[in-house]
Length: 120
Length: 275
Length: 148
Image (cartoon, rainbow over all chains, first blue to last red; front, side):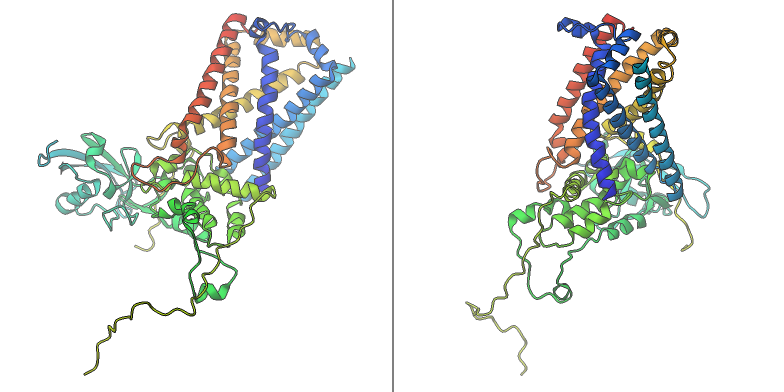
C-alpha cells in the first residue's frame, strides 16, 4: 500500500505544483506579456519587491506550499528513477535516507530565509 | 514485385556461441526472397543451405506459440509473422531480443519472463477450494463480462513487450508488461476471486508503479493484446483499493446443475456392440 | 551445456532513451524524465541562490543577479521554463491516463491493431499543441522583455 500512497501523493503534488509554479513563473518572468493584459507588476527581481511579497501572507503561503510540494514531487521522482536502477535493498535505504535529509535541508533553508528577511 | 520474381536480401545476423566467442559479432548471409517470404523462412533457408550452426527458436510458424521473437531492424517482431518485404530494405539486421540473456545466437533466455508470469498467479482463484480441485459445473459469464478481459487473454508469452519496455531495460526485477497485463486479465475476469492477492503482489517494489506509460509494449505486441492499456486499468484498481473506492468484487456464480433434464433427442448408441 | 549462463543483454539506462523504432509516446516518456531531472537540477541552484545568497543582504543579492545576467544563463532560464511547460502538461496527461481514464474500452484485437494510447492520440496531440503554445508565449516574452 505504501507505494500506492506515495505515487498518489506524487500525482496530487504534481498537479498542485503545476498550478503554483505557473503562478510563480507568470509573476517573475512574464511581466511583458502580463503588461499587455493590463497587469502591472513592479520589477519582480528587485530586492524591495521581494521584501514586499515576503510581507504578504498569501505570497508566503504560496511560496512555502510550492517549496514543500515541489521538493516532495521532485525528490520522490528522483527516488523512483533510482529504484529502477536495481540497487540492493541496503543501498536503496541509504539513498532514500540521503534524499530525505536533502529535502529537509532545503525545506529548512527555503522557509528560514524569508522569515529572516521578514524580521529585518 | 511479381509473385515469382526472386531477389536477394542480406540478413546481417548477430552470432554468439558461448563455447567459442568472447563477445557477439555479426555475420552476413545472402538469402533469396520472394513475395510472402517471412523472416523465419529466410532463417530456415540459412540453416538448411548456408550455415547449419545458426541457432534460433521456432515452432508453430504461424504466430501462436511465441517462440521466434527477435529484433529485426531495431524493432521486435515474431520472425514467422513478419514478411521480409515489409521492411522495403536490401539488408535486414537481426539480433536477439534485448532485455533477456542470450543463450546462443538468436535464442533469448526467457526464464525470467516465465518466472514473473508465474509470480502474479495466472489462474482463476476462488474461495471454494473443492470446486477448484474437482469442478462440478461451469461459471456463468456473459458477453459483457467476457469483453472486459478478452483482448488481454490473447497473450502468447513471446516476450516482445519486455524487449520494448524502457523500465525492463534497466530494472531486472520489474515485473514487466506481460506479467502486469496478465495480472489485469485475471483480475478483470468475472470468474476470478483473487483480485486482493494479485493487487498486493503488483503493488510491491518493482511492480505496477514503475510503468511510465511509454506504451512501446503495446506497439511491439504481435497479437494486439495492448498490455499498456491493461496496466493502466490495473493501476486504476490498485489506486481505487488504496483510496477505499474499489468496487466490491463478486465472482461469477456457479451454474446450477440441471437436475430434471431429459434429452430431447435420444442419444445414439456409439459403442461397438459385442457380437 | 546445462552450465552455460546466458550472456547479459540488457540495454541498461541507454534503453530508456532508445531501444528501437517506436512511436511518439515512448519519447514523451524519456523527455518527461529528462525535463524532470533538469528541473531538479535547476531547483537546487535556484533554491541556493534565493536563500543562501538572498539572506546575506541586498548587496550580495545584487551581485548574484549581476553574475546571472548573461546570455548563457538567460537562455538556460528559458529552457527551464520550456521544460516546466512540457513536464507539467505531459504530467497532467499522465495523471489522467495512468489511472486508466481517457483510454476507452478494451476492444477485440482485429488486425491491423490500434492500441489504446494510439486510439487516444488526439488527447496527446492536444497536450503537445498546448505545450507549443506556451513555448511560443514564453519565447515572445523572453525576446521582448529579456527576462533581466
